[in-house]
Image (cartoon, rainbow, N blue to C red; front, side, top):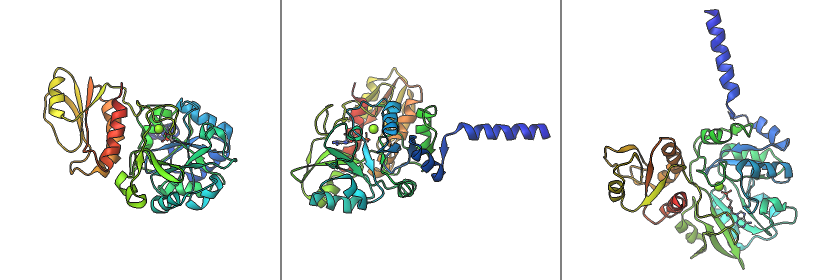
Length: 336
Ligand code: AMP
Ligand code: MG
């Protein structure tokens, strides 16, 4: 009995040391102060974070993610009060947006101060900045004397992580810690807004619906860039992609009948579909609630991608509100 109990005890200790998931904020502070990279929870997706002034940490972020250096990082600050330390000039409409949506899933691209390292901004004279809305990350940022540079905590172009386990699966061998903040509530990346002559332009659709932004600043142009170089580098056509072949459709039943010979996975918005060849079906929101759909999106893609399917068929959402942002992600996830 004693032997058994001891064995059991060792087994538990083993498991404890194997996991990198933890809620220990003081350890997170120690690791970051030692120029290490850790993963942090945010309301959008989990981020791979490091001190923006540490060349070592920021280089490690790019290396761990295999992210190309032309793709700049978002700078995370503890509150709007830190904005003046990061940027040279805050247009009136940027201030309005920050006051309305921070802490929250809105990233502002503004003229950077000379003290912001080029590595963070991919050599651009602008910097992307936001205040994340997650209690643990805000607590962490308040204890640090520097902001955190953090892209999503996934290898370049793969499905974004919305749970600590997703990050652990990707990076158990390359980072020491993932702060466990539960599932990300918004579930898709931040909305990114840049400025030309102090007028806002949307560079990336995201967790804040377009309509909510227009309410604050009026009609707004969307670039939602598709190329590697211009205004929002990194807005690549293929992104957020499962390894399993994935297609996007307006007509689920038709697409299912066209692939009737194969082991199918279905990602539907709110409907449940019957079919003998459907091996796994995930419905994003049975009530048709887009917020719920967004928060479930990446976890659903992770699960479908692990289910040993021939093909994943994803259904396009209605093209308004968060549906528009989710469709943007699904389009990039299904680009060949
Ligand atoms: P993420 O991959 O979610 O970390 O978001 C980073 C994205 O923010 C990049 O891929 C760019 O699209 C955008 N971004 C970051 N910095 C800038 C900048 N200075 N100018 C324009 N877009 C930026
Ligand atoms: Mg990303």
